[in-house]
Amino acid sequence: MKTVLITGSTSGIGLGIAREFAKAGYQIAFNGLEPNGPEIASQIGEEYGVKTAFYGADLSNSVSIQDMVSNALDHFGKIDVLINNAGIQYVSPIEDFPIEKWDAIIAVNLSAVFHTSKSVWESMKKNKFGRIINIASAHGLVASEFKVAYVSAKHAVVGMTKVLGLEGAPYGITVNAICPGYVKTPLVEKQIAEQAKAHGISEDEVVSKIMLQKHAIKEFVTPETLGKLALFLASEEASTMTGTALPVDGGWTAQ
Image (cartoon, rainbow, N blue to C red):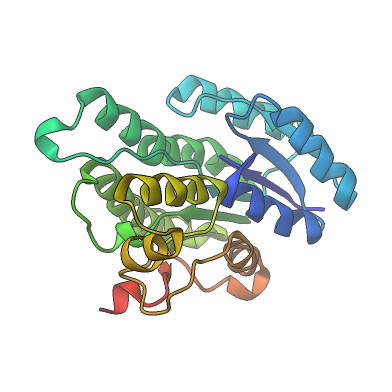
């Protein structure tokens, strides 16, 4: 039985990915900020009949990350797949962008990807098998105004994916990035309601004129879609795919 460690997996995209891996029979090491994280992990385990554990590691702290990986390796015996999903966002023009927000976004969205990957690397190398899947963003390939930290971090994650793909190739370790456009999550649904109120327009107009403006296909990406793609990248069939950045963005980056 294979084991996957998914950061930010107690809500949104990460939880959707975790469900797909649980359906496929993976043991899951959960991580997230939700206070009921242990209950979420336990519920998924019971629902799909798989072994789970929860680690509330602070992803802005390298020691906390190392402890999480070490504890997960002790508990499950191995980590076959690492999915770096956790991320935070802040939107502001650069002149007003708080330094502490820059530091936090770089820590969680970029540095944590390095620390988790480094922490699992020796184990994967020893096992001659590993899959690292980074949930980057369309903003890892193109830019938007007022998101300087997020766009910078996601572009760097795509670069890191290429480097680690090359380094892992001799050892059966593949490293790939998935670059979603807008994904329908509870957080996005809340933003839609807030923007509708702020702009005095309907929620449908927020979706079409703001959220999905850059999507050629005017639909949200679903967490289930990302989970199924991640499952493929984790499979033996994807053994010759590495160092790639795969857009799932409704045609956004085709423009």
